[in-house]
Length: 404
Image (cartoon, rainbow, N blue to C red; front, side):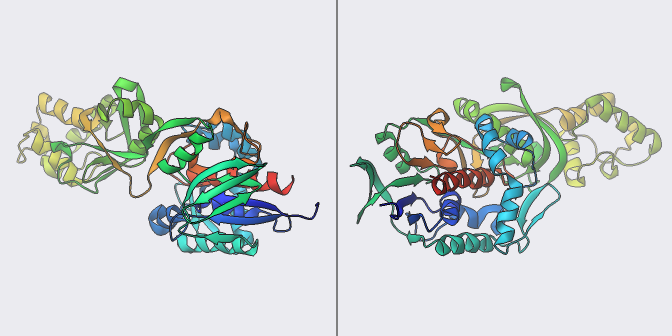
């Protein structure tokens, strides 16, 4: 009896599912991975524009948890066992080095998400994992101390289930039948839809260190900001969308924001403008390069405030100066709706965290039922953090099963 391998079924062939399969000891386990799509790891494939933002160069668990609006308390212990440094080593040991970019995001040195997928697939196959695609799970139930896992065409029995389907509504229906509590899903990581003359025809214009405030929620973020087709995006907006995901959902994505495109106080901006006026009094306003903004944006500010383009800066009136400064440092916009950030759709919500033992990622009141990845009510801002949570949680599951 002692020589019998444990039957493990992994439900979901994404980052977490494949990382569990890649780290299970084949001497102890007979592993079957069921994936409903015909191709696995689609989120890995499209992440980082097809380059895959594998993780983030933040190696202190106490700092790392600050990038997770939901789950930061629970992840602290998880990251003490497996953090970005371990992720780097894991991929390097399998022949894929990672590199750190200026913003600390980490990518494969080859800039190819396919290489990340290949490493995971090869490691899972090396562990003799049997993989079945187009095998969406329809039901899971307990049967004589085992788990019965059903797909449309087949039934399987397992000693252990590892559930990592991402945030699929069908998956939550299965979990609810097992009396697992689910926190309602709401979108996280999205861009703000804004129709406003200040942003018109300026798609692609970016600001290095802007500040965005949501006065109604007393929330603010600093960081790069980008004008898009729909309105505003970039890290400053995406961070706000993640931290305020539930509140913005309650506001039905209809709210006011105040944007400081320069990221400096209105008083400081006033000083800079006055100095420029003294130094270059004869400069025409449209040609004046006073602030770190593009000429297109600057000219647009002058036009919407109906400031005469033929004027020299010396002739700028006090009222006109105040209008310019307000537009640059305290510009009010009404957000009406949201757009998904690229294809990297992330949700807040999922399995309620208090039902999980974060030492093993096991559901506390179910035998041999583990969970990992986006199916849990844990999410992060953009930058490789969501993947890191997957790798770390999956590692804990495989370690727990290998040592049991």
